[in-house]
Image 1: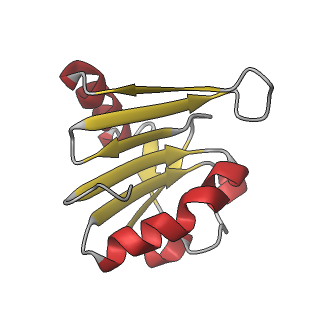
Image 2: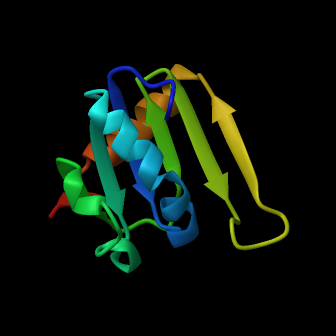
Length: 110
C-alpha cells in the first residue's frame, strides 16, 4: 500500500485485516492514489470505508490487494494458525482478480 503510486484495488472480508490497513489506505488517498474497495456485509460499516470513492459490496469471502496493476497480494486463513499470503506480479493473476472486482455479479456498487 505504501509503495502504490496510481491505484489500489481491494476485495476484503476480514475485519482484523481491514483495521490493520485502513490507515495505510487513508495515507495512500492523501497521495492521490485511486482506491477501489469491495467489502463483504460484515465490513459495510467499517471505519474510514466511506472516505474512499469506489466502494462496492462483495459476495466473496476473500482478501485480495492489487497495487498499480503490478502486484497482487492474497491472504488466506487469517483467523487460523496456518494463515498465509501470496505475493505475485503474474499479469494473468492480476487481470483475473481485477476482472472479478469489475464484474457486477461479484462486486456491486453500493
